[in-house]
Image 1 (cartoon, rainbow, N blue to C red):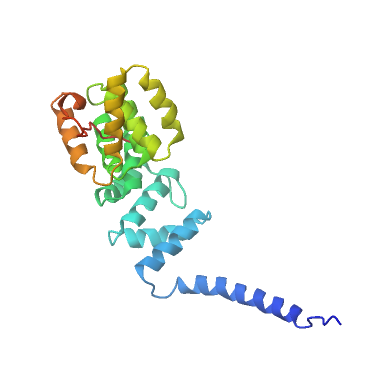
Image 2 (image 1 turned 180 degrees about the horizontal axis):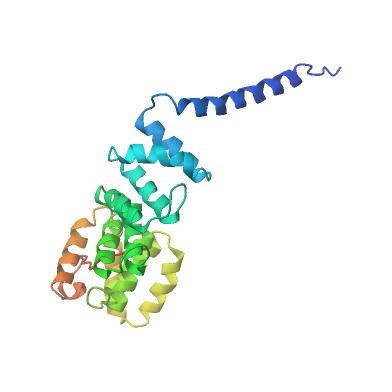
Length: 243
C-alpha cells in the first residue's frame, strides 16, 4: 500500500517562505550593528555578485578603520569603476594602504600597475618592490613577473639563473604560464646553472623565504647578480614589481 505524502506541498511552501525571510533578514542586518568581520563578508558577497554600489559604503567604512581587505577591494573598485567612479589615483591610494598593511593581492596589483603604467606613472623600481612583497607570500603571478623582470634586466641587472628560479617557483605554485617561460629560460642555462636555479626555486617557495629574498634584494641594489653571491644552498633574490 502506497501512502502519499500529503504534507509535501506545505513543506515546499514553508521552505520558500524561510528562504525569502533569510534574504530579507540579510538585508535588514545591514542596517543593524554588525561585527567588522560580518560587514566585510557582506561587502565581499555584494561585490562578487555585481552589487558594487551596495558594497562601496561598507568597504569605505571598513577601510576608514584600516581594514586591509576592505582597502584592497576599494582600490580594485576604483581601478575598475565598479560601484564608484573610476579613479587611478584613488585605486593606487587604497591599494598602497592595503599592501603596506601586508595584503598580498594588493601588493601584486600595485606591481602590475607600476609595471604596465596603468592608472599610475610607470615605475619599474616600484613594480619590482611590490612584486617582491607579494612573492614573499609565494604569490605565483608576482613570481612570474619577477622572472620576466630578471630575464630582461628591468630595474636591476639581468640574471638568467634568478629568472629561471622565479619562473620555476611560480610553476611550483600552480602558474601554468610560468611553466613555458621556465622551459624557454632553461635554453640559456648550462646543466649546472639549471640545477642551481632549481635549488633556488625550491628555497623561494618555502614559507620562510623572507631572509633569502632580503639578501637577494640587497644584492640587486649593489648591482651584483644575486646568484654570483649566493653560497651553495642559499637563495638570493632581486625582486620588486606590478600587474
